[in-house]
Length: 174
Image 1 (tube, rainbow, N blue to C red):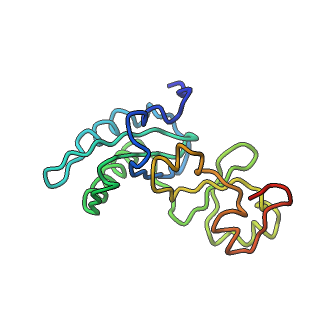
Image 2 (cartoon, one colour):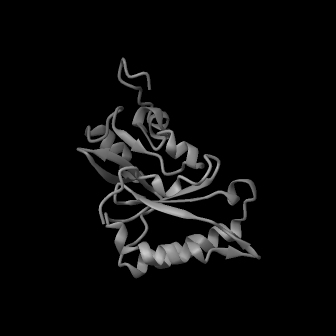
């Protein structure tokens, strides 16, 4: 399945305020591997009489992005839990797994890599991770955040930079 020119094209009909979930897969995959089952799971997403209208795309071959407009203004923890359980089943049926929520996602040498939070201090000490290393923030809340480029930021401008007191390199404005 060729990558779309606009990786967010699946969300063109949704408003910036739509709720977004970014789920890390344990390995890169082709979206075609999960597309039919994921489409079916989202088409059947209902809770207490409400039909949800989720859409999805695969970013970087490893980040499953799901967006839905209703849940931004009318949140339902049960509906979200049900969707996440469905996604878990789809991912497992494809022989994949969701990444560890304790993983920190960065871009190194042009590819997405993960480090467990327990490894951060050592990777900062040995120079693997630096203040300007791009960190991918999977905790974005709205589709607008994703559309406006807030997925990726320098490590120094993230919670990792604050926790480990890493400053942005001079001249970067981060």
